[in-house]
Image (cartoon, rainbow, N blue to C red):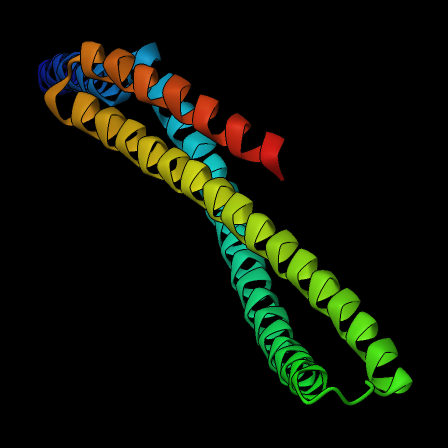
Length: 188
């Protein structure tokens, strides 16, 4: 009986030793190399930057659309006032051709219409310029979003292929994306 107990204990010790080796081997397989943790961290950062840039790009696009709308309104006002101006001017030219005196209130009205035309033209040009600027901001931010997404993709590929070089190459896209984002933010 003692021999049987010793044999069971020897078998148990061998099993424990084998189990310990298997567990240590499995434990080594579960730990990730340090660079993969950096890939995960940087990809999270790129995703946040991408979301911020996308949101700002949408805002810029909305502002551009509003400015375009205002430019259209002021251009229409200018055209309406311009039509009134030229009709009144033609009336005065006809009166002058018929050797009839021009009405004083018509002359005053002509001056007012000329000023209104200039005001509406200036407002239309200002809104047109603002719309173009906002579209440039949108474009810069949209390019930044795209480059951040490529950097995230390169990080994923590097982990799948176990090649950190792809992740490093993706960092180039991130740096260029940051440049476009900064350029877009400067114009805001």
